Length: 375
Image 1 (cartoon, rainbow, N blue to C red):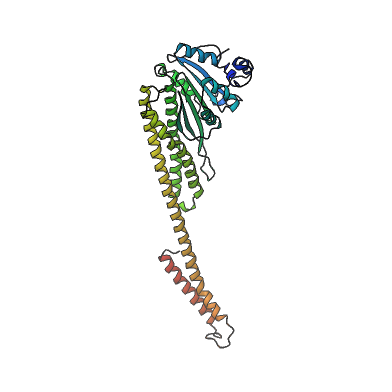
Image 2: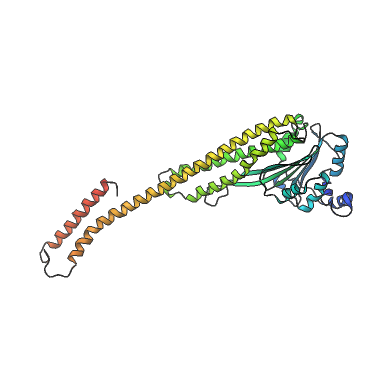
């Protein structure tokens, strides 16, 4: 049986019987490779478990405990364990095996954490917010544009434990890319941490490019001929989704700065230069988000100005027609008074004259308002 297939033995270490007894029970639960989106999730928190030595995947047999023991005994290689939304019960054995701090374990299980970097003894705990662009045919006031998830990384000198939350952010392609470059992977677990950080930040830039298309479309609609009719809810929705993206991107600056500049025992010095490159990409993402926020504010203000102008135009039209209608209303009101002695009241051509005067007056007012572009 493969090492990944026997991984379940550590999910219930707190129970009576120890590691071996729990392992026999856990073997009954099939492993699901969540690195393939079509297969996830199907009831298992285990994505994969692989041992690497000299940058190559080893064909070691046995369970996770044996793999960790072999790595620590030889002093070479490391174990990469991947999980997807584990429960507290499932994670308990893993936490005991790798001596993970309870606070970090709680954060990894509960999720909904801000991007951060924490040190617990010889273990490094990093939290990354993953983002995914949600495709939609047309942007509406209720459209979901950005979906977020999380990746937690426990990093030690001989192990990497990744905990993923959310339906996106699969690390399968990333794992394959690393395995294609054994020289880089041979530098140790910190290579995996850098690859994850680089992968997450690249996704930020990809999502930002897609969001820009939505912003460009809204901008085009606002400045179109009938821009005042654009639903302002679309603009507010983009601002809300941009805020969600900002919450994922901005807090990551400090952790990446620490990884790039401060000496950390479990991070190889030669890897720190790569973190500086990731930090530069993150800075670009932050600048674009800030620019988008300002642009959306400008678009919203322009839309409100267009609405105000349109309302003023409507009020001018109403006022012009009211002025035109006021002429016959006034004349008819005067001749509707019940007096016996009124000018032209009994004149044979009085009615025609009054109608003519009213028509001429209304026509003159209409031409005057047309010239002033009130109508």
